[in-house]
Length: 97
Image (cartoon, rainbow, N blue to C red; front, side, top):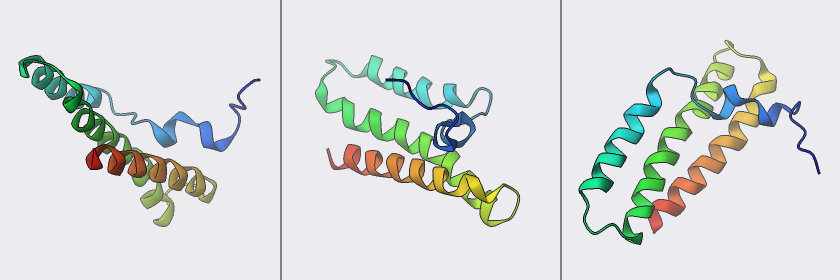
């Protein structure tokens, strides 16, 4: 089974942040906090996942706002809303844990 990559739902600029260096601002504190948290256990997984999904929520919401402002094509709205929903649901699931 092959993944249809030409679909608008799989365009990286919709669901992954494109900012150079932004990933280090998320992963550096997470890695430092996990390194300092001794002993490392499963209780650290929800807050780590929550931080990552909170970070991933920013890009699709940014696309939605740009579509609403007329700065992006309206075809990007549905994929951005889908990825916003996925990231938000994963964030809430992580925070509930």
